[in-house]
Image (cartoon, rainbow, N blue to C red; front, side):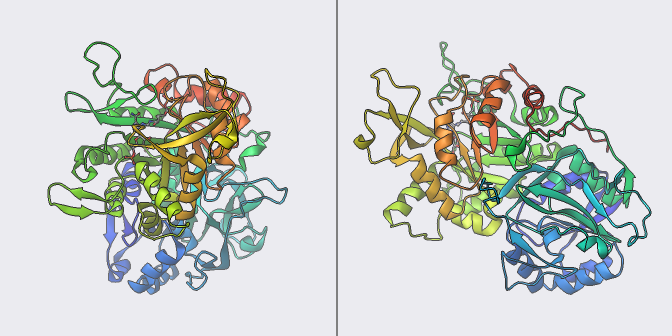
Length: 574
Ligand code: 1PR
């Protein structure tokens, strides 16, 4: 097998990149010391998390001169995400840290407000373009016509997975004058560099290893040294409709993100199965009340990937009882899933400081998260532990300790890698003054006619309700450094009656990090409803997919036909 060298210097999910490279028919050789760089022909520099952390790790390990030499020698170089950012002079994220300065401009943080006053979530998480090619043919030796050709496999109608808070602003003509070919993405009113290349250098701000077939094509093009090629046609899932919906302006440029969620637990026979309940009760209502078994986790994840799911989430729903360090089968599920599923994977359940029963030693939330990242997860989702941490934060006059799981994982892997999964329950009151918690007037009063509701956080899979409301929780965890909120609703779970729009509106109005709507989806129309009636960033479904009532492709087809922007369907030929 032909080889490519990967630089092994950062924390993060490198496994998916290795899997993607192997899927393209190449083998990975590791660069573990600066001296290894000179033996490499093609190098990929992956990067996750913090610009300053990445660049100072590279600098202190002595890699920067070796990388500079590799680039100037004309050998192929591919930087991914912070690996792209490393090519620039510096970043607002770490003003005192220098980049490689191959491109002498600076990266800036996204502004959460657009000039027209509309909002956008930061970090930017989701699928966007890298297709509007800006190419100065006079300055380039390549005579290709950028408008009809594909640059490193990039496609004008494909979408790519981005996750970042900082970006290289794009000024028309500036980089092209220096001979660069630039593919841009636009987030709200900010246009930035999505991919860039010149000579032997190529880099993407998006994660090609997480961008499905479209991303694998980019990796393959780099590996095969194919700079220019023909474009590949895409279509809306299930139809031949075009996929550029200029009318869907409220997404800030991102597609409507659809997530398939798999609640996983051990059944009574001891096998890990995908299960699903009503209001968090996952046992059958029949005699024997077995744990409902809806299928095998790896097979189901793969099925949803091929149907066009933009992300897959696994929630280990009984991990509060066990130590996840001892839960090797769950790690194995991640490992096997990441071999064939090239979209982001989130894993939740049991991420907290804990005791390893086999050694009697303490294991930190960060150690647990490390195991998950090393097994193929891109994000970890924290439930119960986030509630406890938020309570302590509020009791402590909003002082951060730096010691919570959210803070330690976010510091090491970047905030985009940390999700908080919220499991709220409705609590009805007659009058907002009857509770210190933030209420909303509901369209669905309870049997006693009470019209106000607050949303109480729960822990341990809804078994214990706390005196903490969702707004208190999400604002606290945002301050601690969470990157995204996965917003369940116990009352709606498994009800097939649509999402809790009142809850979603309340949470979206309180934080600027992305929010995923969860619980209650029963048909494709519910996805359309939540996207039209709230500003939510993504929508998750479980039961309706597991029971085979609808496929992910049908949801996307429905959204596309309704004029909402969805990621097109593509296939990859290795
Ligand atoms: O508390 O950090 O150990 O994490 C445990 C995780 O497991 C939490 O994210 C919690 O939400 C989840 N969990 C615990 N018990 C259950 C249960 O169902 N008994 N599942 C559970 C949560 C909610 C969603 C579900 C949506 C959509 N499941 O994952 O998929 O409600 O369902 P629908 O589309 O069928 O309506 P920790």
